[in-house]
Amino acid sequence: MEAPLAALWSAYAALQGPAFPSLIQQLPSDFPAPIDLLEAVCKTRYWGALYVSPGASGRLQDALTDSAAASAYDNADVMTYIWNEAMYAPTVDSAISASLGLLSAAARVAYSTGNGTGKVTSVSGPATLSVLADPWKLQSINIQPTSQGSRAIYNTVVIILVLIQEFFYLVTINGLYAQFKLYARVDPYRIIIVRNAISLSYTFIGSLCVIGTIWAFKSGWNINGSQFVLSWVVLWLFAHINFLTIDVFTIWLPHPFVPMALVSWIIFNVTSTLLPFDLSPAFYRIGYIFPAHELYQVLIDIWSRGCNPQLHYALPILFAWELVGLILSALGVFRRCHFAMLGEDLQKKEFKERLDAAVDFEMRSRNEIEQKHSEPVKPEVGQKYKATCPEQAISEEGDQERVVRKELSLVLEQVNTRQRREQERTSTACNFGPAFNLILSHEGGNDA
Image: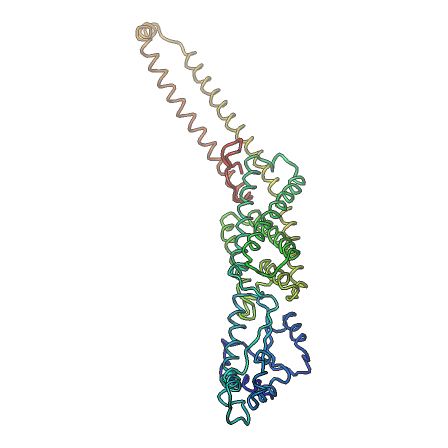
C-alpha cells in the first residue's frame, strides 16, 4: 500500500464514527482512471470518491531524499476527491467536502510525524523540509460548484413559495366561480376546459417568476439558458400538480379538515427535500411519493448536467400526480355543478315558501277581519261606538299592526329555521372550498 494511502487509512481509523462518512476501498482495476470515478459519482453510486494519484508515493519519497526532486515536486498531484455540490449543497458541504478535508489533514499529520516517511531519517534543505511539512494538498473535482448563498432555499423556500402561489390563486378563482354562480350557469365540460386553461397559464407565469428569482441570485453559478428552460418546465409541472392537489382537497374533504390537509401537505413536501434519505431514518423514505422530492431530484439532474440519474422514477411519479389530479379535479367540477344546481333549486324553494307563508298569513288575516266586521252590532253599542270612534280607531289600528307584525315574524322565523337546516345539510354535502369575496362581484356575499 502506498504511503499516502496508508496514512489516509490510519487517519480514518481515528476519525471513524456515526458522524463521519464511511469509506469503501476499491481495487484500482475497478476504476483504472479518474474519469471512471467521476462517472461513478455522477451516476450517484457514491457520494464522493477519494483517490491517490498513481506513482504519488514514489515521487513523495524521492522528494524527501533528493533536493532536486523536492524542488520539482508538485504536492497538488497526490490526493484528489470528486463530488457533486449540487446534490443537497448545504449537506454535502459539511458531510463530504469538510469531512474529506479533515481526513486529508489528519492523514498529512500522520504521514509527517513518521507514519509513512519510510526510511527517511533526516531531511536537508528548505525544499525537502517544505515537502515534509506539507506533503500534499487535497484537490477537489466538483462536478457542479454550487456555493452561492441562495442555494439554501432551493429545497425549502422555493417549494413553499410555489405552494402559497397555488393556494391564493385557488382561493381567488373559487371566489369568482361562487360569486358569479358559474357552477350553476355554465356547462361542466366548459368549466373543466377553461379552469385548466387558466390554471396552466397562471402556473406557467408563476413558475417563471420563481425560476427567474433563482436565476437573478445565482451569483456566478455555472448554468445556461437550456437549464433555465428545463427548470422552468419542471417547476411549471410541479406548480400545476399542487394547484390540482389543493383543489382536490377543497372538493372532496369535509370543510373542517381542509386546513389540516393543506398544512400537512406543505410539511410532508418540504420534509421530503430537506435531507438525503441516506441521512434520514427509514420512515422518511415515504417522501418518495411526494412531488416536491421528485421536483428536487429532477432539478439536481438538470443543474448538474445529468449527474443525478433519477428521472426513471421521478418523472413518472410527477406525471402520475398530474393525471390523478386532473381526473379528481374534473370529477369535482361535476360535483360542484350538481350541488350548485341543488343550491339554486333550494333558493327558489325558499323564496316560494316565504311567499306562500306570507300569502297564507295575509289570507287568514283578511278572513279574521271579515268575520269581525260581519258580526251584528247592538244599537246602544253602535251609539257608544260612534261617540268614541276616532280615538278607538287609532288605538285599534296600532294594536292590530303590532299583532300582525308579531304573528308574521313568528311565521317567517319558522320558515327560516326549516330552510337553515336544509342549507346546513347541503353545505355539509358539498364545499366549494376557500374563497375570497371579491369587490368586483355584482352580488354581495359568497353565494357558495
